Image 1: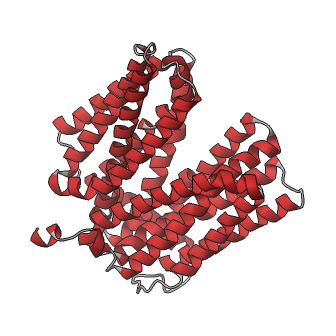
Image 2 (image 1 turned 120 degrees about the vertical axis):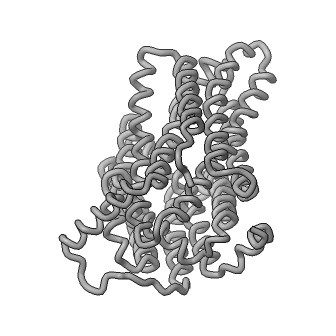
Image 3 (image 1 turned 90 degrees about the horizontal axis):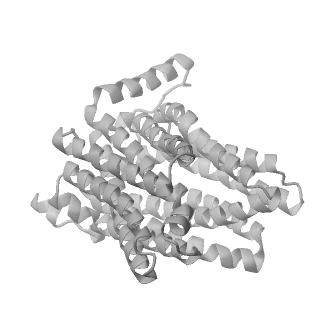
Length: 415
């Protein structure tokens, strides 16, 4: 315990191979954050249809939900560093290809859908490889501060990228913004190629179908027999589902419930992001001081109560300053809670899962968590036809409070 107390952010930089991985992730995150704005503009410019935009957004999540569990089992016996370098290069080529098609006037809605599907499919192999690589690059005693530092710098870089995207698109055009994303993939691959790591337990021969089925079944069995890991997966589903009402109904919340304009949307987004930054920074200290279950229950309660608190804005409509204060404070606290809970899950997941199962189980973890978003969106869309926005936020908040009360009362295993 004494040794752990001396660890801080500075010590993470002694983990040189992890720092290389972190830098490559930063490069990727910047490119993606520029591209996400540019791609949204491109989709609307090419299709002129909100329906097409929704379909393409849905297609983007399909490989994560449907393919990643199988990809994780396949990646388990491969060289993880090589998988990440190769997938970065493939995504770079795909993205550069989209730029070429755009410049030659050959982009259609179906091309955009194919591009999204291809990119997400390749990413389905990259993500489990990256998750399995971290414990091989970072000593366990540095998990908290390493995760916190990585999340913090990634969020900052994402903000910079999204801020720069508008300037880049306005000054140079959409194609330049997308090209930056392509270049970022090659830059990330270049940095990762210098990571020094010796992996063991790799496949010595070509993976056959029987061996693949055995690996996949082994991951599922491991998840069934590890209650702590299984509980992590369930909580990841809850956390992802919990933020859907805010994401899906943010605009009607602001206009219908709070009676405010588009400026409020910016305030909510900025303070939510600042909250996430703060959560990343304070996470190591919270993890040292409180138990895993305590942090998860506190975070879940804050999200539940905060979701309900948004609706109080309807009573404060005559006082816009009070609405802004309420919404800003709630968004900031929600950002902190989501960030801390996500970091706790990431760190404890790496600690709890044996390294030889990390890619397989991590892929199932990501797939189930991602699946929560479209499923919850579907449920909320059904509720929206019969219930008001206020009612949906109150019901969502009550469900979260009850759920995390159950986690506390039943002392659900998280360690």
